[in-house]
Image (cartoon, rainbow, N blue to C red):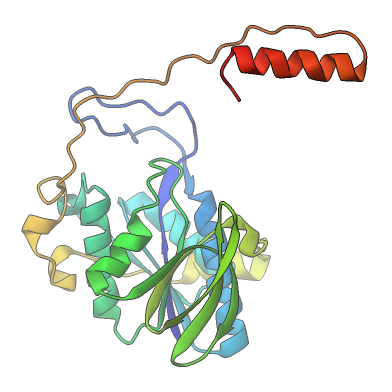
Length: 262
């Protein structure tokens, strides 16, 4: 079985600034980390490889420094890594990003399963995983909390939603996005870290994956950000309720109704 795990390097802060001209996050000078949700995707890929055999490959699109996140994935058991990095990829929205990753997955070839974290913490769109599936024309399952069964031709997963969960069975190849309930990411071993430092990571350009230049980067992105602003401050006024437990409950209920919370 050949598994591809898609990851992203994100800013390690909640105080990232927005460029007033481009309306994009200013990443220069900000410490970057592996997207936390992607650590669960990496762990699931390694666990499935260990259980069913085959190969697990980690794939990322980003600047040269994103190589650090790829090496972090290798340190916990990923077999090999590929970085998509070129100025032409800069400014890609979720559509262009998923298109680029899908083209790279096609180049890798004979992929059975693609795993993504449910979303990236810098954008919170949760669109790239489903976008990859759409570009590849593969079946998909989002918010996967467990892989129940997998064979050479199909996969059955438990998919979390607001009212509980669904059991979904799909033919392979397919794309899944996973939530943190699915596993506990392992800590890299010293042996793993040493191995990751020695591993050669190829860098692919648009020509390497046969990408249509009109569909990548800023020019290939249909999304246009025209304005950004911080959310309004939360109401912080507090009211102390005193009395017996029954009186407090009744007072709280009245207060919530007055505030139209319930």
